[in-house]
Amino acid sequence: MRWSRRREVLSVFAAFAAFAFVAAYAVEPSGAALAQAAPEAAASTLYDVAVDARQSVQVLALEVDTEAALPELGREGYVVELKPKPKPPPPAAAPGSGGGGWRPPFVVPDPGTAQAIAYQMVLARGWGDDQFACLSSLWQRESGWRVNAHNRGSGAYGIPQALPGNKMASAGADWETNPATQITWGLGYISARYGTPCGAWEKSQRSGWY
Image (cartoon, rainbow, N blue to C red; front, side, top):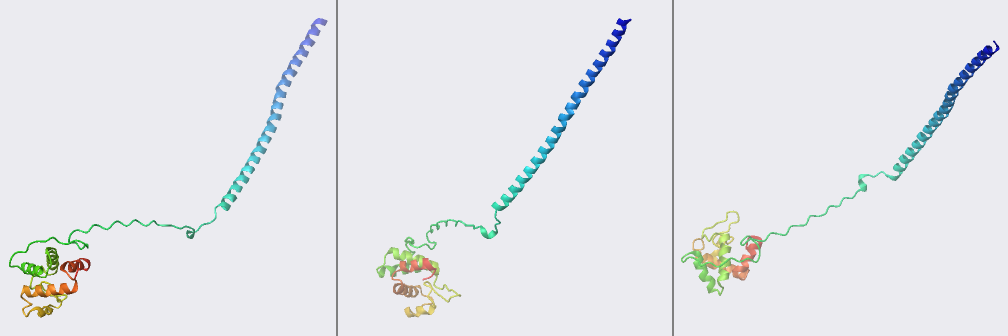
């Protein structure tokens, strides 16, 4: 009887001890975990607050520095310089286009024409074929070597385009119809004003008239 009772007491004590051990094991870790969790949560919250505050200060400082480093500029603060474009070289003057220095080539005039008469008069004055070539081009431009060529705008008349036409009366009364009279007057005018037909031609090349 005593042994059985002792076994029963030991069994109850063992069961109670086991229960207490289990209870202690279950409660203590939970409590430790909660105790540890609370400080970590608190520490995490304080860290976040500190980081947010630091970032706010850095952003504010950055904004202040940026505004201070960038002064306000108006359009008057900018200067634009335009580089001038290089001027293209002037085109070379084509023969007979008005460029200085070019002289027309000599062409033998047809017999009986006004040009043939002028050619003989040019040689009689001691001028050569080059001077006749200048004269031929000059009066071709002025009148086309027509005796009755008349410029209604200016009043110039005849082969040499005398202005006015009646000036040629000093060379003959038939100045209106006779090419020899007109040429005689024209060569006298060129000799007195420009020296040679080529001198008159060069003036006409420069200004369009002689």
